[in-house]
Structures are given as structure tokens and as C-alpha cells.
Length: 255
Image (cartoon, rainbow, N blue to C red; front, side):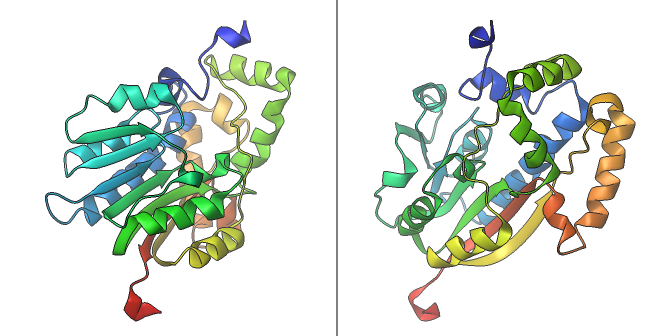
């Protein structure tokens, strides 16, 4: 039965996204993971950097940050929190970012693939900004509202479509639960209203319906080649799945 299968709230489901037997699915998630991990390493300039993680998932980034400094990791899913609570250098809490209230004590925050699940992303970004020290950075990723992946994902709300896709992938696939899909313009407005400047911006992940399911490694290589071209075209790059940012909290001198 569908209810017995792992879903978005299960660690096994989250981890499999990076280990999928489908080349395109693994590449789509792996490219984002590589970018976020690289950003964490670049902006942890010294031992003891204080990290704030919004949304733990399967704990990939939690473990990476914990090697570099103390981490406060929050999630609304108690299972995700419990899975990282025993890690050295990690304090894990069940908490909602839209009601988060922390003093400005953190150097680097990571919020990857979270705000698309929230009805109040503006409030979430403002609360993260309040928790960062002046000049602190937020590593943020979220889908482009009209990327090919998000356009197709809208069909996954229909059980018949989900069933067909699961057969094609030969593994569990479900509705993504994205209720707050943001265009770049809408997100940038929220970013600036929350008190951030953009330091870095990157787009990644081209989903090609049919090619992803049937063409294996050659299909993934084709998507990667096309991704490189689309990334250079301002309007078309929003067809790529993920918009990635490094944001800097404004300092008093910036006002």
C-alpha cells in the first residue's frame, strides 16, 4: 500500500535521492548537494564557525558543518532531529523556522530545499537574518517556480501519474509537497526585504521528461550539456530546477 512506503518525511527516502539508481535523478540532487557543500566549506573560514541549519533532512549537511564548528540544527520532523542529535558538535531541536526567535549569534546558516514547503517564506528569511551576526551568510536553495522539474512535479498530485512514474524509476516517487514555488523575482524581493545582499547566485539541474526515465547515463550527460548552455541565458536559466544563493546579512554601515 502507498501509505506503507517511505515518503518525504522519512530519512531513507531523503537519502535515496542522492543514491538513486536512476542517473538523472541522482545527478539532479547530487549537483545541488555539491554546490551547498562547497559553499559551506568556502564560508567556514575558521575553526569554530557557528552554524545554523534550517531543515535537517537526512543529515548530510549537518555532518559536514559539524566537522567545521558547532551546529544548531532545527526541523519540524522529530525523526530527522533524533537522527542527528547524537552527533558531536550538534544541538538538534524540533522547531519551526517561521516562529524561530534566536539572538544574532551565528556565522553561517544553511536553508536548502525548505522554503518551498512553507506558506510564510518571507517570515522564515527574516527570522534567519535575525539569528545571524552582521555580515553572516545564508546558503539558500529552492526550486525555480517554472523549471521543467517543477512543471512536471505538479502532475504527481494525481495517483495515476505517480504510479506510472514509480514504475519507470523502479523506486518510490511521490508528490514533492511544494506549496510555495517562487520565481527568481519574487524570491529576490523577499531576500532584500529580509535584509540580505546577494553574494553568489547559481542555477543547476535540468530535468528532461522521458530522457531522464529512459536514456540512462547518456540522457544525464545530455541534460548536463544543455544545462551549461541554459545557465548563460537569463530567461531560459529559470528552466533549471534549483536556484542557489549565498546571501550576506547587511551590516549597519550598509543601511
